[in-house]
Amino acid sequence: MGIKKIGVLTSGGDGSGMNAAIRSVVRYATHQKLGVVGIMRGYQGLIDDEVIELTHRSVSGIISKGGTILKTARCPEFLKDEGKERAVKTIKKHNIDALVIIGGNGSYQGAHALFTKHGVACVCLPGTIDNDIGATDATIGSDTAVNTALEAIDKIRDTCTSMERIFVVEVMGRDCGFIAIQVAIGGGAENVLIPEKKFDIKEIAENITEGNIRGKISWIIIVAEGAARADDIANKITELTNLETRVAVLGHVQRGGIPTAKDRILATRLGAAAVDLLLKGQFGKAVGVLNDEINAVSLDVAFKKKELKVDNLCQLIKILT
Image (cartoon, rainbow, N blue to C red; front, side, top):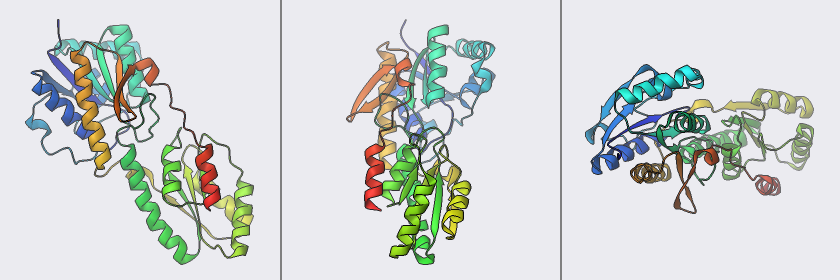
């Protein structure tokens, strides 16, 4: 029996472009004569039976909006067998034949469990600002997050130069330094601290002191939240250099905002590709892009963390300081 009705949900941390993905899934599926429902609040909504009908008109005007109209949540309850069983009951109750799940590594693992243990047909789209999903060059929301952070750092640079100060700017990235390394290069930062690479705070302080002697009186250090706390780094630098150091924590502003053209286009392409996979009976897959071509792999491959190659980029930042 073929696919007649699909459900779509967003799970985990939100990212700009998720709405564009929802729109693409709904309208492409409708074009293919499929029924579509939305599950509110991710896996929690599956457990709690929060299911709404979605039509072509339901997704009007959302392609340019950040966040997700389906809301999102983290769901510890879904990690338990009982939670998954309740989710499956909701799927069966609403005659949902397949799911399109938009999220990050944890969302992929949840989909993999539904597919392998309960036989639920699933296809996942990479929705995470960290760009740490395997088998895809880009994830929905990552480009917008980088551009949002970069805009803030450009403004901080103006103050940093004018007031002749050291700034430590903390960006998101609990386990991945993607945003930090991108904005450090794009923003002309002097240092970047990321989870993937050890750093020597004494060496950084020595470089700042030497630069100060040469007349370099402003300095920006980008810190991924998973590498260190900006406050701790700033206090240590002040202690070692006796120079005034300020902190800026960008926080959740990086998640929201109008999605960039790149994120809208990526989300739209992947949403349609996910529906195509379901129609072809290719379940338990994740869809992404490699070299600008649609790429589909099994979920157990996709949720393995992507290796962030940073040595050359960190060396480039050091050279250009």
